[in-house]
Image 1 (cartoon, rainbow, N blue to C red):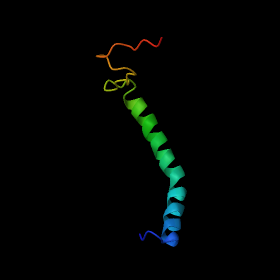
Image 2 (image 1 turned 180 degrees about the horizontal axis):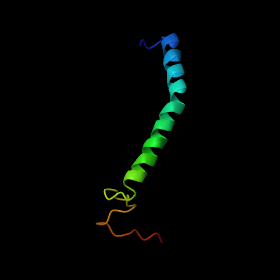
Image 3 (image 1 turned 45 degrees about the vertical axis):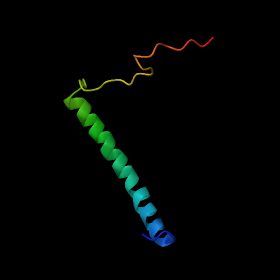
Length: 60
């Protein structure tokens, strides 16, 4: 795709906007199926806000 080719860019944007609802539906179905097949995710580790090696900063 050429940098200044608005016609090709418009085609891509049209295809993406037309496919977006279908892709959202696929993600939703995949999420539901994964929750049914394995309700507890043993490989999930929540993100921590602070680095455990650094002491909390004193904000006085």
